[in-house]
Image 1: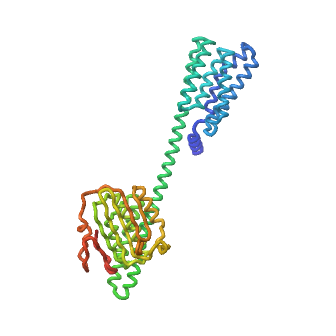
Image 2 (image 1 turned 135 degrees about the horizontal axis):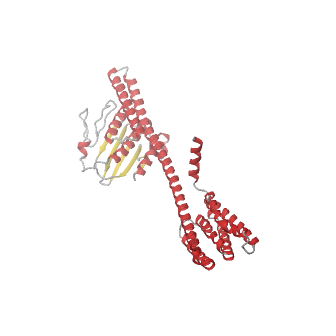
Image 3 (image 1 turned 90 degrees about the vertical axis):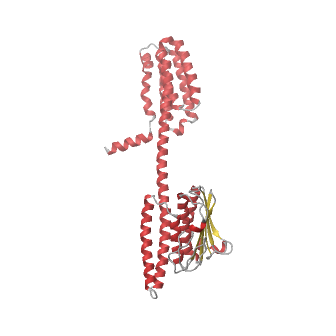
Length: 413
């Protein structure tokens, strides 16, 4: 049963072949009986003509089901020879030989399946059949005319429809493969960004715990607790990434960014102004913040990192800059060389109609600039209250927040 099922699948994928039209050669039995009965004049010419019609018909229908040769000049030459020979035999022998016209219609319909060429060939052919049929046999052979017309049109319609169905099936399979590839790419990018950021934070906090352990056990235990929290959060995010439901929160990413930067001894500064963003735009900006901060923690050796979010009613802009090792294009080096993370972010933003640029900034450091066309999710909000820091040591401005190396819990945006 499995063998038969696979065979049916292969036959369905290949579609019909020229063999399906070969049984219609039985229409030539009338002409054959006319020759055998000895009623036909010049029987040798008729026999050779019938044999030539049969061979031409077989060659044409077999070539008609091969897309590579159906439109070849040889196919059209064979079809023209079949038309001329069929008309010649019908004119010369009459009644029984008129049944070759529907056979000719099948061959024409198999080759000329669609487009403007079909009526240009079918109607003159049927008109010629009308003239020859009524001249040789009068109204008694009207069925031959009707059969020829139906043979051309129905064969062309069925084969064209079958070809369209096969193309649609192929397109559907290609779309399914493309969807699988896109899902794999999405998962690999999400996993890269999630694990890259999480592992960087774990490494930084582990180093901080190791440094603090001999002098301040409570602070070291706090760093270990943070490592546990980061690990649990990473597990949750990876599960969400696997199921494709992770949207991301920009505020949460900013909070994690402050924590990671502070643990690495980098002063975090966050400025946010402009209208509220849509969830999709916030999710994309969250990925940019995560990747940019991860790169700053791992590669920059910076002392200060600035995250600035601004925009107008129709366009939002995110800028992440640090003052690390990147004094210019020559100094950028491998530390800030664009990796798969930035390339993946660039593709994501491009798919949403945005842009992402990265490179050294004047005066030293490295910067990432992302822009997105967005519609405001709400009315404009004051930059002060959203970036107002929580009470903590040291004075801070309304639009700027930062923390030293020991402040693992920075203010929320």
